[in-house]
Length: 70
Image (cartoon, rainbow, N blue to C red):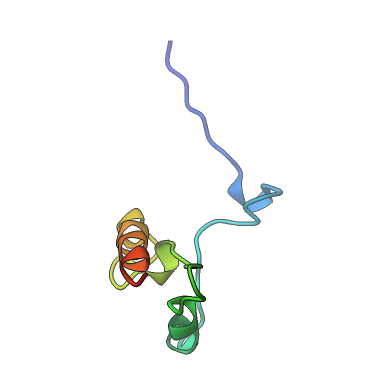
């Protein structure tokens, strides 16, 4: 027996949609603040990566970079 499972991310009460999309120029304005640390508090995620932003590769790079600033 074969089956397919999907999820309606657009109507998910926690996700509130699918992937992150910015308007032109919006990232250049927000990215420096997203990469700023506050003491030992870091923001890391797929959308603040240097390359492959919005993908798992960007999340890994961002997570690797953040603690290195400590």
